[in-house]
Image (cartoon, rainbow, N blue to C red; front, side):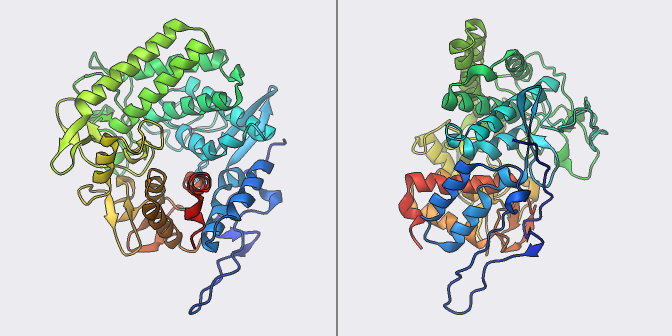
Length: 476
């Protein structure tokens, strides 16, 4: 497949025309929801299997608006964010987030994740995912502490003034545990589906050693770290306190994360959802090195660290809440200080069942989830437009569609899932796409027209319901 240029997209602009669902009058029903996708010639990447799935799923959705949203959102990553080509006879895939012309390790994995089940049937889609594994490996080798990168490795970031080691090719250098976890998640899933072990080449093995080394370094057992970060802005969450190294920690075996998956600085350095994600990723790396690469020594190191972090989570991060009993704290410092909250970005405490770290009916997860959906969670918001999880990243009045989507994806209750679908329908502000966040009382006040992760995650939810709870989609 030839390399295709990115499209600069406003979510309301398609082929030069503003489109919107047919307006409702009285008891009339909308019958003409026009596609908000770019025309075929302007799409960055096309997949026959994705198109087949869209038609199949859409035909089983009774609600025309929900079907329209699915058709717009599910292919948004492929339609608008992919730069795919072959470099030295190897596939190379660069995935921007949408309205930011850079690739996050986290977002890029999450954006293509819903297409993974189709790669056995679609050779080009399989090559796209393989190319992303290769590209992420290059990024980690450039700097395992960075979270976002440019395709052009000589490009200088607009954040070059950040007080940290900003190399060319790096867009942003915020140390987030989950960035490295997502790269492992993608490579492992690609291999599990295809059986293609060629991705685990010398570069990938070197990157995996860097991941393990970085995790161990950020346990900060000797009280030091090579990583610091400071940015001069008016937002205090853009930098960790104490000259960029974060608040003090008691080195109990957990891994420090200076930033959350929202790219906001953590309050306490031991970010629990990301540490739980790290346990999952370390076990996946161990399995790969044991069964495919045949490096038992390294596999043992990965398993050893996974067990150490897991034990520390159980001992220090499962704490008593005044109303909900033993639940997960969001962040801790190892001294006994803790934060009870959640952030809509993934990994979150809500997303632990989505990421495979818990089953939805696990008692600890259920108690934690009950807290997250209560008024005891300072970032669970209720308003005239909807209710749902927010994020400090967007203030005290904005709900994230991603949080509503994850609530539905981790629920076993048809009524709760239907309620989430109704809220998502009611808050896209007529655009036909998900946004980063919206005002809890007025969904027309939203952030980010073009946020491909949220769009594709919504599509993933609908596909999940199609396979597991088709009766929910058949309700009008």
